[in-house]
Image (tube, rainbow, N blue to C red; front, side, top):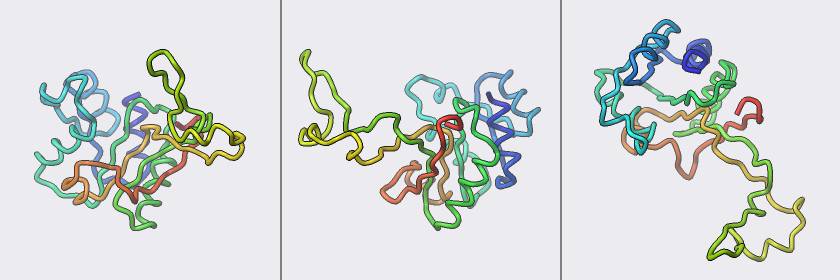
Length: 176
């Protein structure tokens, strides 16, 4: 999965620098063989509660280099391709946006979401939606974790790929 992620970034032709962060030497060696720069991850950035965006931010902060854009490709999306990476990058540039994330359509409408409180079902959203036909619910999208891109300066200042004006790159289920 590491090699597939590296190849999708490298083969897209859109990134001058592709790095892989890990504390595992085997992963770093695989990544380097695939064309990435190995980035040794500090032990403080290896816990279950560490967010990937914070790892990216730390590595960028340590570099003596500035970029126009920064991207995060999660290894958990092995079917993301170089074409996806290329299209997403071209979309953020064409829109002049600060951030872009990949999404896919929810399988079921988010308006049907329920939660359980005190052993009883409760509407997750507006309770007035329960009388709508499913076809009347708005289409919902969720982050799929495949692609996060942001303008470098914005990302370094805000440490996020999500904001009110984030551009969605819609992927199908298989690519997601």
